[in-house]
Length: 305
Image 1 (tube, helix red, strand yellow):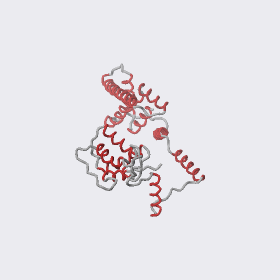
Image 2 (spheres, rainbow, N blue to C red):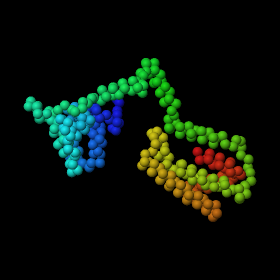
Image 3 (tube, helix red, strand yellow):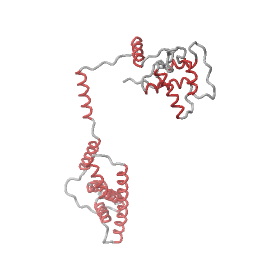
Image 4 (cartoon, helix red, strand yellow):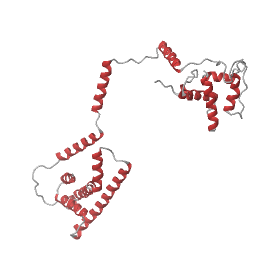
């Protein structure tokens, strides 16, 4: 169905339904300069009822503009006073266009519009014909049965190549795991002497970071939410996302406490540690045994999986 924007609605069309009446009224209001009028709901209803009556009697916006400015005999009507409301103005000026001089006419009979209107379909057909004559309009061609089948097949192929968001995430995780696997050190580990203290800082920092991330990833609350989202194949809601963020934040907080506890254990030889602290201490111990920061990074990241 062809739709014409409100500001391009033709003023020669007699509206036939509610949508067309609203567009025609918009044209009339703009032409009369009533856009800035502040009307109450009752006043707006009064204007709409009056205009609907004249629309139903074959008056288009152009015909109403002529009738509001002139009498049926061509005499000009007096202009609107400043204190005159739009509804009262319509009622007083359009009274002259009732068929009062015909003895057999009913009270609701009106005169012929000063300008004949047309239907929207007739106006659209005339506009297309004019555009064809001027070379500015081309009727859209219809597809044959073969063309319709080809279009359907093309849409199916395009939809098949469009990756599912969940499939894209899984593929990215698979490629990341493959990249980490390719960095795994092949063969037996060769015992090496402990590296100097100045080269031990980077592996220990990596170990502390890996431990905090591992505790967050293996938090029971975090894993429970993630497993439910994977099973239901959906993104988290706003409430679930808030719970997930709080769970990750709590896990990072507990990991930070565990890192402090592990550091204290190395200095003070503390024998009893919490599970989080013991796990951080294990990560630190692994980092201390590695000579190269790259090896420490690869092994620690593999242990997180």
